[in-house]
Length: 179
Length: 227
Image (tube, rainbow over the protein chains, first blue to last red):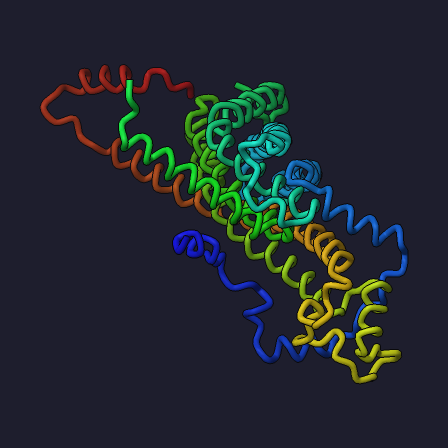
């Protein structure tokens, strides 16, 4: 029992707000309060986002935003030559596609698998349905990370390599990497 | 065949640990989905970074010069990604969380509850009220249970949204810019080192053999290079 307490008391470092000094607190106190959010649908939307945005959906949102934001940043990196820049862009795109596909699929599958009896905690009857759903999301994500220790090497890495090579081979421009 | 006691004990011990672990996850993340997204996000980046470095290293279609750029890029990507993900995402989530717990960001239902509790609601700028002040904490109020379901649902939504925003900022904006800066510096220094080593090798004199023999060996060694 004692060791369980030790595990549950693991600290992941001091939070950002707890590190703010007196000056930070004064600035915070001086900031005006936001006008209360009065739109009922918007409030419901925020609440549902907290309840329904499981880690697979979060990974999907991150992947979609990554494909829109990261390749242009690599394409405008003037510190490297044209050829390297193109390989870098191709690799970034390949990495995002491979990582998002496997990340979303494995997280989704593992969160679904949390309905199995073996993953049911003995204290589940003490908490609300929402808290239990969040547990499934958390536990499913942790199990997914264990699964991804293998799929990162077995699927992600070869898929990234495959997609990078397709994009490099297709590039026939003078600065392209095709040999 | 009888199962040895060691195996039985190990089985019991593992089952006990797993059961305790499930309860810890339930207790720690059951009501804090934003925190869970940050912590599992950090773990996820560590694991995927390891695989990505391996993918570049073993890709024979990428030339050594490009690998010299891409491998440091991946390592820089991993370090910056993990650090910026944790620092930025956690900070954005913490600030959002603080805004809600102090009542700086609120809803009419929470505000009504505060009014009912007897806390003065500021009507205009300059009105003295504890709401929105650093040390004020709605969750510490004596009758918090009344508003708890509404408050927690709203706070979890804000936390998850802030975690999401923080992770997009850190992974898709800060990290790519920082890692490109770092990796290009690494590439330049590595290429100059490789160039120096090549030059030194070329300067070695062919002791003990004829010039013709040296040329033959040099051709055998570097003959596959296309100029």
